[in-house]
Length: 226
Image 1 (cartoon, rainbow, N blue to C red):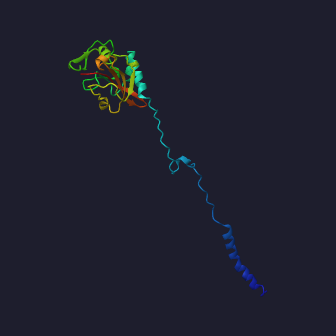
Image 2 (tube, rainbow, N blue to C red):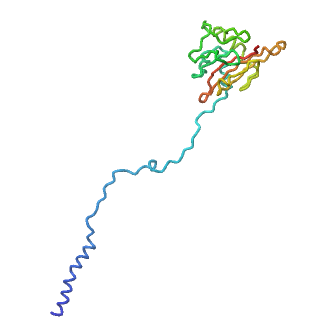
């Protein structure tokens, strides 16, 4: 019995430590639950990284040659079609009529909805006659037949873009008045040798760029002057 007593005491002393070890191995505390997700992942396009650069593209259509626009305007003049002519007029600059190559403040300018008709009998002063200095007082039809389409310019033998075939004592200053403009000249050379080349005539139509096209800003008559 005495021999067994130390063994019993050792066994009794070991019991508390065995319980603590079991608790340490098996009891890890209450389980923690994660809050349920209430959103969805941000799409790739909304992430903070910047999108790749898109190269700029030129969407403007190529502007046709100014000679094409000039051809249509001169055909409208030949046909006396003022409605077609008005469609070409620049809405901001209007259409200037100059009886001579040198444009000046006396020239009349008409907006698209102001272009007179051939039935308009009212006389206007369109400038001054070369030489005499007398006022050019004519109806629109009279001015048209004298200082616009006094030759069949649609069939002119010489057509040039950006340069003049017919030059005289009156310098052409169209590009000073309209720096961004382009022009086309319809030219009839002198027909009579005895006139020493003084009976030539030209019609100059001027255009300014407008988007992918052209707008008419001036119709200039040019011929030999004193």
